[in-house]
Length: 111
Length: 115
Image (cartoon, rainbow over all chains, first blue to last red; front, side, top):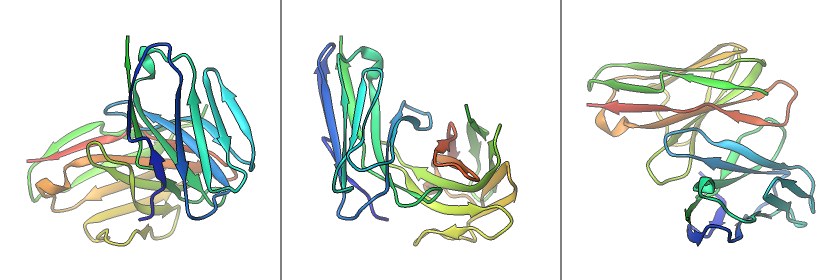
C-alpha cells in the first residue's frame, strides 16, 4: 500500500544534539501523527496534529502540520539516550480511518 | 488513558497449525480495529480493517482465508493465522480507535515464530 516518504532513514547523533525528521506525501492528509517504536513493542503516540499549520509541542518534541497538508516534521531537542528508537510519521484522511505510515527513522543517540 | 492489549506477546507454533492473536481495547469501545504486520527494520503494513459485527476489509495481497479476522464485540478482535508457514513469522500489531474518537491506539504487538 501507499507509504509516506520519511527522511532521513537513520540518524546517528551525540547526546544533547537536536534532531529533525520529516514526512512528505503526494496527497493530502487531515491528520498527521508521530509515533515512536521501541524494539519488540507497538508504536506509542508522541504527537497528533489536526490542523494545517499547527505547531504542537510535547516536552522536548515539537511537530508541525504543513500548511499544504502534504507534509509534517518532528523535532527533538537536546536528545538523550532514551530517545533511541524508530520514529514513524502517519497520515490519516478522516477520523477513525486507516493510517498510512512513513518508512520510519531509526535514531541512535551516543552518550 | 486508553489502552489496547494484545495476547499472546510471543508465540511459537509448528508449520501447518493455526494460531490466534487477540486484541482488546481495555477501557473504551472500539468500533474499528486495524491489523498490521511488521517485518524487521520495516514499517507497519496494514493487513485488514476490522469493523465490529461485520466482515473485515482486507488489503490487496492479503489472503482472507489465511488470516481470519473476527471482531465479535466492541472490545475484542482476533486474528487467526491458519496453516501457518515459516514465512508467516512476523510481528503482528493491532490498533483500535474509539467510536467517536480521533486517536488510534496501538497494542504492544505479538511476535509469531513458525517453526
